[in-house]
Image 1 (cartoon, rainbow, N blue to C red):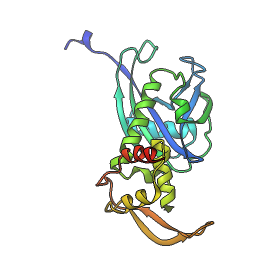
Image 2: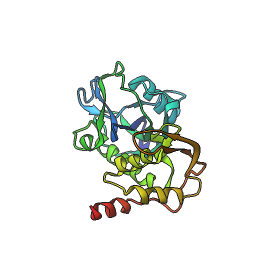
Image 3: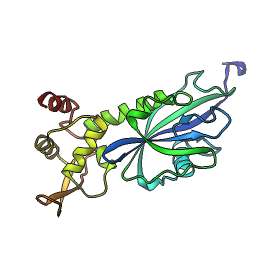
Image 4: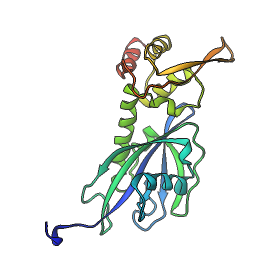
Length: 237
C-alpha cells in the first residue's frame, strides 16, 4: 500500500447508556454545543486522546460529559462504525460504540460541550432525529441489550446488589417491552444454575415478605430466557 492510499482517521467512543427510571427503559442523550451538528440530540461520547484506549475514552466521556462514574456501570463494546459519510467533518471519523448499563443512575449533568443532558424513554428516543449515525447506533444498542438479557445475567446490572424477583422481572419487561407471567418467570429464573442466589433476607411490603436475591456467579445463562415468553403472555391476555 502506498502512502497515498493510507487514510488518517479520528476515533470516537459513542455510548448507548441505559438505565431504568420508573420501571421504564431510558437512554442518556445530550444536546450538542459543538459547532458540528450544534443543537442536535446525540449519544454521549467524544474523541480518543493520545495515549488513551477507546475504553478509557468511553469512561472519561461518561464522567466528563454526563457525570456518571465508572464504578456505577457495566460497559461492553457494541461494534465499530466506519461508514465514510457517517460524520460531516472533513476528517474521517471511526466510531467505537459501547452499551452501558447501570442501576439507579443519577440525573445527568451536562458538561461544557453539551447544552443539555437528559434521560429519554427509549421508545421516544428511537423516533428522534439524532446527530451523525447515532440513530443507528441507538437501535443497535437497544437490540443488543434485549438479546443479551436472553442468554446472560446482564439484567442484574440494572438492579441494586440485592433485589426481589419482582424487580428482576420488571427489568425484563422494561427492556423487552410487554409483560411476563410472574410465577412462570420465577420458575425459569430459579431453573438457571448460578443466575441468582438467595440472600436469606426478605423485604417487607404490603403483601407477603418478598425474598431478596443477589447476582450469582454465572455470566451466561442456560437454558436462556427468551422473548417468546413475552409473546406468550400477550397471547394469553
